[in-house]
Amino acid sequence: MRTLLVIGIGAGDPGQLTLQAIDAIKRADVFLIVDKGEAKRDLVDLRRALLATHRPDAGYEVVELEDPPRDRAPDDYEHAVLDWHARRAALFADTIAATVPEHGTGAFLVWGDPTLYDSILRILEQVQHDARVPLAVEVVPGITSVQALAARHRIPLNRIGEAIHITTGRQLSQGLPPGVANAIVMLDARHSYAALEEREPGAWHIWWGANLGTRSEQLVSGPIAEAAPAIARAREAARDAAGWVMDTYLVRRDEPAALPS
Amino acid sequence: MRTLLVIGIGAGDPGQLTLQAIDAIKRADVFLIVDKGEAKRDLVDLRRALLATHRPDAGYEVVELEDPPRDRAPDDYEHAVLDWHARRAALFADTIAATVPEHGTGAFLVWGDPTLYDSILRILEQVQHDARVPLAVEVVPGITSVQALAARHRIPLNRIGEAIHITTGRQLSQGLPPGVANAIVMLDARHSYAALEEREPGAWHIWWGANLGTRSEQLVSGPIAEAAPAIARAREAARDAAGWVMDTYLVRRDEPAALPS
Image (tube, rainbow over all chains, first blue to last red; front, side, top):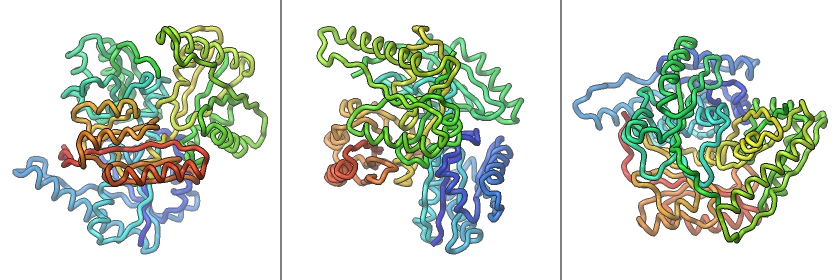
């Protein structure tokens, strides 16, 4: 039986690491790193810097994993997705079997929190389900970009008694469920907040941040119509500074807050 | 100008403290503690233990703050709430002015994350708005019970591409917005998940946890109908062990997950 630690390492600032995460980092024999997209190189470097700080012994290995290739325009979409998931789980199982000692400990260092918009727990569940490599999985929570965003803007995520909706740009562009007054959007490369402003001009405020907790951090807030041009500029400034941009935002309907109970 | 640090300290396990939080703890001259409810004594003790560990110098003061009394059955509900908020902000301003040195640093140690279902940022905003005590506020994020719950159950908070709704028991008992398939419930003392089961028998799964990250932690998961009696028993077991119980849960509709994009 191998132990697999899935460790949240925070949203970009090395100070967001928890003591639990540091303890877990100290236990691992092998670190498995999965990244993609334009920020990949910086994200890998940030993890290597964390390891240099918290594992001065250097008694570990680092293995970079790449997702298997994927058919982006399949005839049968559903089948192609399931097939890709199966191939990915097989690749992870093989890599774990080949690199983590049989009674040893592997660790995934995950950006943000492993339970929020990250696929690693689903992949490991499939590896366990396939039963080719018996695994004991432990999860260590990490600070998310949602929390970093709210902290940097010094705002509560909701008004008293209100619900909070965490969603994607794709879902936001299709509209929020009725009654939702606070939405946090992750994974939006398409400025989907503009759809809110179009539907209800002047009704929404935005708190936006990019590359949170890093040197290229950018913050903008205001009514959507006013903030949108500033966000577009700040997004480019973050990309110019870092070579990549990852943003998160909170949108809130400007209506009287519900009274507390 | 006084500096006020609002520091998230995690959901119960002292290992959830971040390096940022520890650095902030080291900067403070005075710690302001606000607690209420049945867990109050343990929560205060946990903070004092954190301080004993991370501030061995003991060169700080601890001030416990209590919310001002409140009229629970007022003739004019709205006016009573606004009046109570004003009295609370005045009390906080007076306490900060009396205990934090004029160019010094005060710190609130907040359970979980200060931006999620906590009133301290709203109170400090009102103190700043009243301008009786000029304050520079900094916020340090902390691991929430939501993240501790998902980590202990080793589950993602949502299925691929789905939104997540964070809400209260009060809101859940009135029903979820249409299309919401994942809801996290905090602050529920009334088993509001039973309302989901009544409306759609057999359609929902629950992952529940109490006193997460502490010695009296309890975890239960399953279809709501099956899990409900076990949750009731586990809730009592947590209360018997600790003298208090604080629980959080995720409910998810059992329907095919949306396909990934």
